[in-house]
Length: 144
Image (cartoon, rainbow, N blue to C red; front, side):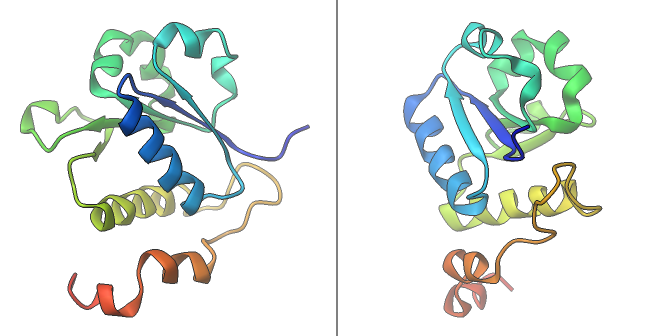
């Protein structure tokens, strides 16, 4: 059995998908991250094996029937527009500066796994070195 969590990114914009994949690989190096440009590609790849789905807002709206039962695993990639404020849906504003984007991903990660990981052998918290890379003390002082 594979103990590495797998994360799906469903995003038609190639640059967004590649950028998010790079950020997630830095934050969660033990994960396998796959990108899909179309929902049909995700469906062809054993879609229920993923620990998390990062999906475009359009994909969520078009395929709510699939994602609604997996809402706890789903993060919708959207802008900060108030028109996409759905109850119970985790939304990640992809139009933020990199530091804020990483900070918000870390918050989602910590919130989702505050009771530990469902995968045996996963660390209970992010490595301190990783936090220092993304949040060196010189950067942190501007956020508070």
